[in-house]
Length: 389
Ligand code: T4K
Image 1: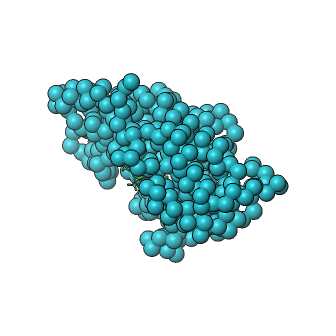
Image 2: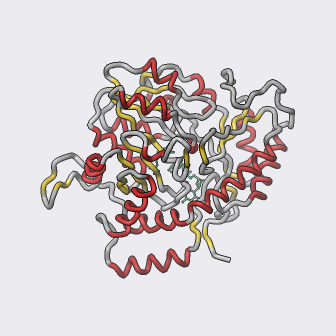
């Protein structure tokens, strides 16, 4: 059997863990890399990664140091000004990237079925100052392409934050091929774990060229600097990890989905707990398994109970961004679902080093805390729920 590392990370059931399949092959390649004497500055391994992603996605793609910088560069390259509409229910990077580009951040509410930006919440916030929307493919669920692509036709730039969406497939088309740009993450906690890393899939070769230049200080030619760039180049070492991760992505996703299936079997009948919905027409990547409890205290009780048993779930994304000091006073259009979800959601342990039996252990621990009361007979899993807080 092939060796792999990261399995159960010292015996703990973690929300994420960077499993490296076939470490021997990776070490052989690392030795070669060391011998090559080239570790950064658009080296051949990063180049190979870019080529592979560009042809996989059908979009010119730039490898970057992480998704946070990828978002910043994509936004800077688009030259947008004024207001940016973003979810508050997301990781810091989504809004930080807009603010750091000098845009005013306006928070819009999410659709509680997908946890992605709700078009009905975005639409009333649009005004003549709105130049950018950053929908997040939250937990690997895809944002509403029909609505957001139509926004582009109305002159508003769209950058998708796809940090969670590596490997997600959609009947609508390759997710990376939508938007002005789509930004992916290769962080240690992601489906393709390179430690750090990211990729910006661009809607044109010209945009990709600008992103690349900005990732290299804004250097144009040998000595001229035309724009205020930064250093966001992906090192050869991280690129090598990413390439290895890509080689094993399919099987990593299959392992994640097997763990999810067991969670669904063992938690599906618990009344005060809502399992994530499957999106029609979407083949998921199993990045996260977010369950929602009917009231916040129950989430806290389960969180504490699991930690007590050496199980480490995460409350992604709590607190939501609008509650953070740095975004206090930022405009929003009402965030009722954001508030309700942030207070009740819990991402359960899920990575490709886990087995379905691990999901059973977690489920058993949850069932000791959550009384197995049957679901309401009227519950319609695909209906938009009334506000549940
Ligand atoms: N947009 C969205 C929507 C995002 O969620 C993120 C990042 C980004 C943009 C930006 O992407 P990057 O710039 O990072 O490429 C983690 C990650 O640091 C972050 O990348 C991720 N989202 C976020 C959802 O999760 P923390 O603070 O929760 O990480 P930490 O250290 O608590 O680790 C989480 C779990 O993973 C723990 O159970 C421990 C385990 N772990 C972690 C690392 C780093 C390991 O087992 N091994 C490891 O090496 O933020």
